[in-house]
Length: 333
Image (spheres, one colour):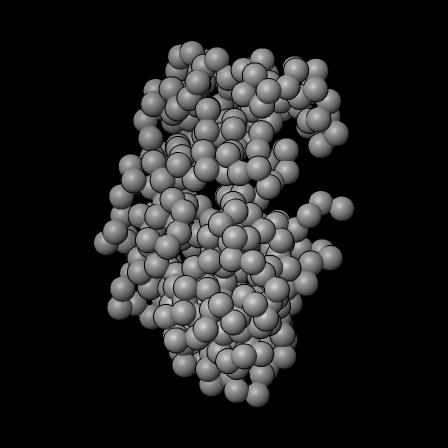
């Protein structure tokens, strides 16, 4: 079975939050049996998340899930968080999070609905146990990011939690400031639709794309993740290179072409299919979310010219980039 991994930068930020609250973080890590060096790696087991929060609650009470968000600041994260915070809206930032779900964790599956439903949430993946305090801390972190993007806004209308209502639920009511539905089948934040797509005062499309690219490059360098995730991250980081072929990738990983093919075969894919799928996914982001001109999209995806890109796009979606963009813009108006 594949190891259940999650980025360490987030749990490290949570530990900083404990420290800001005046809690003894050395004692928490000691009780959790987690060495401080563990938090310096790119990824860690989801068990590290669970045991740290279990220890914090055992020592300081059930407020750990809420207290942890104090450490969630723009300067405590990898470049991905800066990408989220420079998004044009809460909705765009959350779409970015769901898009990079597999490079953040395979312990939970994020989702975001359309602007009318205006909901973000997650479920633990099959076979994964998620400590309730961890889930609350994730929701708290996401809400704090939304409040950063739209300061002074109420942002959310309702919260869903999967676990039973705790004895001291006022801790959570005080932070979320909206009704909380307990014992649901998912964790979710229901946003005010009017704020979900409100332009952010921190919007910076070029910074968002740059930070997203930096994040992709960071993930490609992490040795703790699966081979497939590393190859996906490598492809994403090198999309603009028109010479991005299997020979180039094999040289980067220091293995033969045949070995690379065999390892990707065992993951149920191929380099060509992986490259094609990632190009298609990124094309949507650039055409719709970033509203990038077609010729620039062609360059960013490594096509020799705009004609080749337009033909590939029509093969993928049955219409030209211009038609696709126009239809999407009309749909959202």
